[in-house]
Length: 209
Image (tube, rainbow, N blue to C red):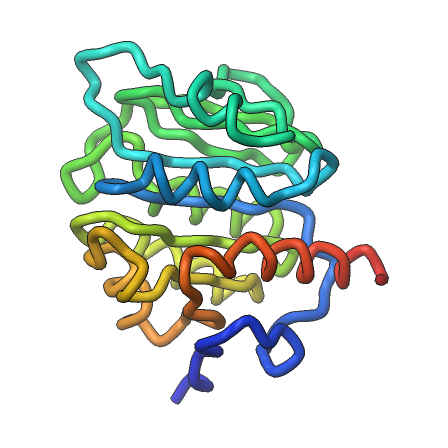
């Protein structure tokens, strides 16, 4: 049986919590814009690379990068084929494209079949990051309907990474976080306003602080 998830911001009591984390993958759906804005706004300018899947209407050009870019010290951009992940930069999956992170740190965009009826898919993002970064991965599941991310968090945990899920009380929609929590692989279940602080603490410990 997996160990119980942390339900507060106590990083020291959470396993695994000490490691050289190199990347953060986030996923959200309904209610995700506000949740992402709050988390990203509290991260420092030189934070770890961040890659994001937010379910978007494929019929319209996304303004998410511009909107979030006004709320954070990080550089926020829509992911492009061949971009390389780097500190201080948030790459957001474009509408109707799956976002993958390769072992060399470069991004790939695909239009392969829908996963859980969505494209981009949190599952595919998390699985690719887990395969490329293994125990150096942090996955974060924020508010959203459906169960996208459920398979992906299993992959992150199997490779030794760390999984954070937003708690029920602060989620506009608890489908995605709840599905992740139900897998038994989530290390930390946190209210939205504590997630950024936990990420900063984890990144600092990974840097040897």
